[in-house]
Every structure is written in C-alpha cells, then in structure tokens.
Image (cartoon, rainbow, N blue to C red; front, side, top):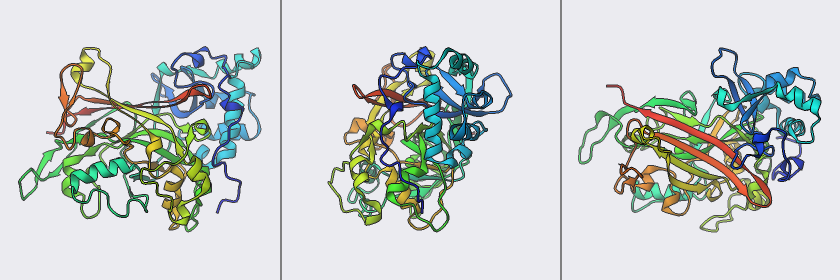
Length: 449
Ligand code: CA
C-alpha cells in the first residue's frame, strides 16, 4: 500500500489565491474557464498540421505547449521531469508520476504565468503558447480500462422506478458503489460525430425482438476520473490514499440506447446499449485545482454506517466536490438558425451518494489493479429534483413527457442531427476564482441503412 503522505483532502496553497493574476490577459477575462488558478491538462496539436500530439496546459484562451516548455530553460527538478512526461502524445507517463510531481509542475507553471514573472520569462513563455482557437485535441490518455459507476442515488431511483416500479432502489445500493466494466475503445474526445446504433429491441407488446436502429437514444451526464499511479495486483488502495491515485476529472457523456438496454440488461447489466460511444472533454481538471470546492458528503438518507473500508472522517467532511454541470441540446434546425444549445438540465456533482475516493477504494478492495490512464465514470449525476436529471430518460419520465425547445421543437429521445453539449464549472464567489471544464460535445449521425 502507498506509504507516502496522502494529499486527501487537498489543502489550499498559493496557486489557489483568488487575487492572483497572469500576464496572459485572457486569463482574467470575465467568464473564462481557464484562469491561472486552474491549469488543466489536454493533448493537442495545431489544427492544420500533421505534427505529433503533445500535452498542454490551458491558460486563458491559450495552450501552453509542454514540449516547447521542456526545451526552454525555465524548469528544473521535479517540475521539469513532470513536464517531460507530459510532453508526450498521451498523458499516461505524467499520470504515473503521482501528486508530488503534478503539484511541482503546477507551482512552477503558476509562477511562470503569474503577473509578477519577469519580462525575460514572459518573452520565453510567449514562444510556448498557441491560441486554443487554432488547435485540435486527442484523447488525453491511452485508456486501458473504463469502468462506469452509478453514484447518484437520485438517478438510480428515477431509473429504477421506470424499470421496476415496485422496487426502484435495489437493497444493495446504499452499501455497494455499483459499477460495471465498460468499453475503452469507443471513448472519443469532444467534437466527434457517431452513427445511431442498431441492435435487438423488443417492440411494445411484442414477445419477440426485432433488429432495428435505436429509437430511444439518450445521453448520460457524468464526470470521468483518470487514474494516476497504479496499484499492484492484490494490493487495495485505502480510502484516505485513494485520491492520490486520481490525476483529475473530465466531463463524460455515456451515450445510452434505452430500447437496446431494456431488452438486454438482465441478468448481466449493460452491454451493447452502452459501448458504441462515450464522449469526454479534452481538458483534465486536476484534483489540486478542485481543492477550494470540496464539500461534505451529504446523503438524503443520512446513512453514515458504511463498511469500514468505505468510511473515514476526511471522506465524510470533504469527500464531495461542488462541480456545477449542465447539458445543452442544439437540434439541426437550431444550429441552422444560429441558435445556441438550449440548457435542459443543471445540477452538481455534490449530490453523488458515493465519492471519488470511495469509487477507487471499492474498485481495488478485492485486489483489482488500476493502471495509469484508466478511466472511471461517476454514473449519471442527477440531483434531487427533476430539472437536475442527467438523462433524457428521467427528464421525459420514460419518454412520456417531451422536452420543449425554444424554436417549438420537442424531444423525448435524441433525433439525428442533434448536438449535445455538456459543461462543468466550479465557483465560490469571494473565496476562489471560477474554474471551468470547457465542453464535451458530440453530434448524432443517422444509423447505417
Ligand atoms: Ca452511465
């Protein structure tokens, strides 16, 4: 088991100072996702080039190129080692280094981008910046395994009511952080399109299935967690060291074919209803950047008697994170008319029943080895009220109550041409600068004929 001191719960340091400013002017722009207190990671290259993808850090409307930064003389020691690991075509090597190295790089980059940096430093740093408007992103890591959890009790109850009206919440839910092993190969970075899936569905009233294009295509609003240092096979990660194994969080859309799901899900759970596409945002928000936004774990049932491996004072007091989330929908007609995505749901990660640390502790308690770059999904993050529901299945009460859009169109489930945009941000006015997750966007194409 990890013997280094845990950073959980993260403490605040000078990189969180809400008064700090950058000489990159756009980092101070109203509403920017990327102030100097943030410094998230992505993998990118110039949009018109065939050059190699490499890691970068967001600042304002720019990307700091870690490859260029390692060629400057601006870093040394552990920060340089971390930047070299992050300058590759995936962030797996940086993820493997652990919290001390991540924090060393964060502090060094914070100082280099700070308004107090010397003119010489600023000149050298300017050579390492590229406008975000001119880059494209790839997946930030080689994802070996993808596990999806089910950590919102509101989502579990809402969906349970639709599938099992008499028994909505299974009795194991409040004891076990439920999850299943998903499919890593179909995880894509924001901005892609994918074909509506086809498969076996059981039409209403029928006794035998038909082969059909999915008619009940849905989104699921989730966060993804990228695993940092691996744990050895057979060596569980303790709850209070669990967040040392998490490099950071991104937005995640776990696309779901509800009609395929309804026919196939018993007895082994989701299979083809879930593995045709998963979309994630390009930017990974580090756990250190999220430190000002920790909150107590609050459960609607007040349950505090989790089994010992899932229970700790730190987890109860600061295990949750207040990450605001929303989902926007733009139909083809809306986009042609120049209309922005219409927000249909706003919620927060703080409502999750199981925390990130509990997800990691539970996943490894049997000795399962997580590896650097593995992706854990939180499950659909529905909040307590219907307008906080993170899936169309819940918002439309099983497809019975359509969602209305500003141009008069309605949706029960997604139509071809629809674009779904998820956003996330943290804010605590007066005590922290607002930080954003960027966006997680994808568009539905027609099914194969
Ligand atoms: Ca899911």
